[in-house]
Image (tube, rainbow, N blue to C red; front, side, top):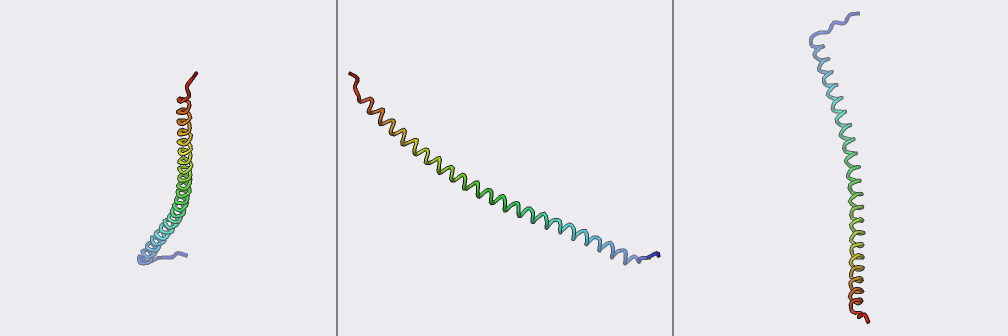
Length: 88
């Protein structure tokens, strides 16, 4: 059986094919967008966690600096006391 298509029918088929290709490309873009959006949310959460870790580390560092300063002050006062002791 041979089917003969008119020029109009061929043009419609070509146009339909173009719409199908466009629909496929748009679907692909929407899928990529959803993946990128999900990845962006994951990265934002990771950034938030790292920021919290950094704040915690800075807090600990500040505490250690205060301890170091207290020890230094105590050592300086002990050294001053030792200088006041006169050797016989």
